[in-house]
Image 1 (cartoon, one colour):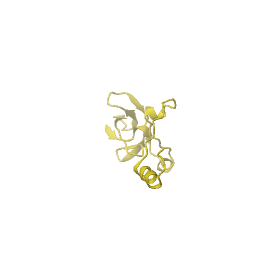
Image 2 (image 1 turned 135 degrees about the vertical axis):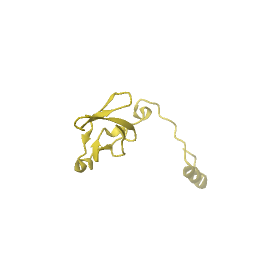
Image 3 (image 1 turned 90 degrees about the vertical axis):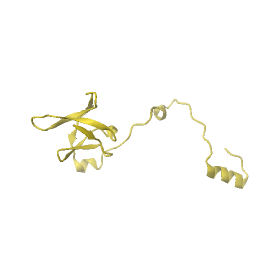
Image 4 (image 1 turned 180 degrees about the horizontal axis):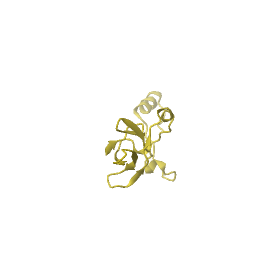
Length: 103
């Protein structure tokens, strides 16, 4: 069953909500459901690759769940060369008004 992952990392199925990995928020995935019992077993992508478990939502615990989106590879690399910062319009106007050199 195709389901959309909400911003809080949950999906719905059969009037119940289930938690999946928060990194999947904003994506559509396939819920793996046992056809005989109707129990949700996990989550997969469209190619059938497992994306992890889907557990019944514990609303009280979900309030304090740590939510972090993955960082882009360039931002996560500490050895990446720093980019030169350019001044914004406010800094340019401030420098022009007070006649100080731009940094």
